[in-house]
Length: 93
Image (cartoon, rainbow, N blue to C red; front, side, top):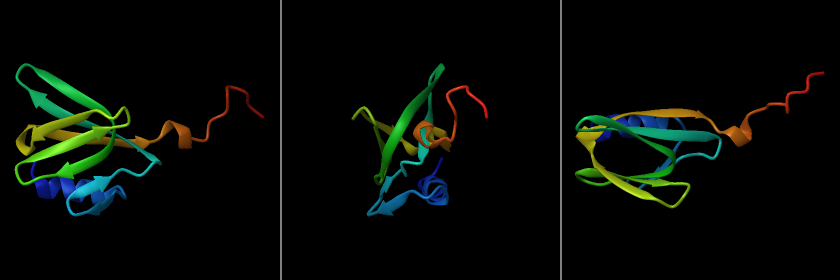
């Protein structure tokens, strides 16, 4: 993926960006998929993406940080956050 595509995806999902750093809204849960020789890595619960000149730095809700070259990023999954879903505890009315 290119930096421009990543910016377009994040802006389209309502991520606030300033100086190359995008914060994922609390109402969204983001997963980034990254290629690695022989396997696919899924980086879950991404809360911030810092777009550097030659790589992307991802920060997770567990305060983990991952750095990848842009060409290794395959895509993102952005879903409604579990805490914002309107679900009952299995009891219907």
